[in-house]
Image (cartoon, rainbow, N blue to C red; front, side, top):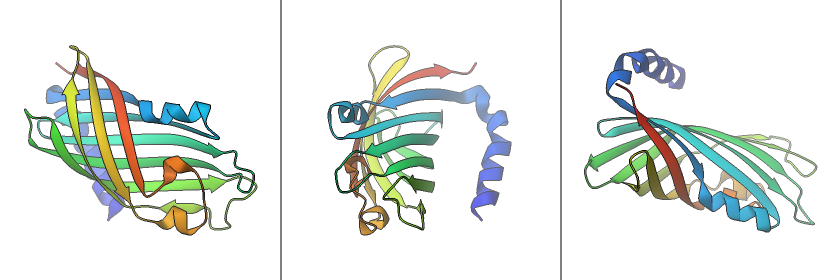
Length: 168
């Protein structure tokens, strides 16, 4: 089912590009990890068509804790709905979210599929730039495995700084 939904989305995407907006962004909250014991770098690319946004996120996480040295690669395909398009408020969920754990202390079943819901506010600051403040709730699969990367906790907050361009 997930493969069929992804295939339909990819096939219809070129037809809708004439009215879409492309967003490329980086999570500014993940950059605070550069001064902590963990590293977290997360980026996002998405297409906004009227009041629906389909985005793909990729992230790299690394823990330098004494008792747990784990790295993680995370990728997701997300769906956001803007019920009041001119206000910037939205609700979203992950369609597919996979986290791959590796490193010295990684668990034996190192691929985890997660589910998440989120809400946020997106507003433009310049003609081609926007800021997206987001709160997300994930299931507890990673914390149940004893992974201590703060950016992979059950509650995640993001501040996405995006560059956007309209297709014409």
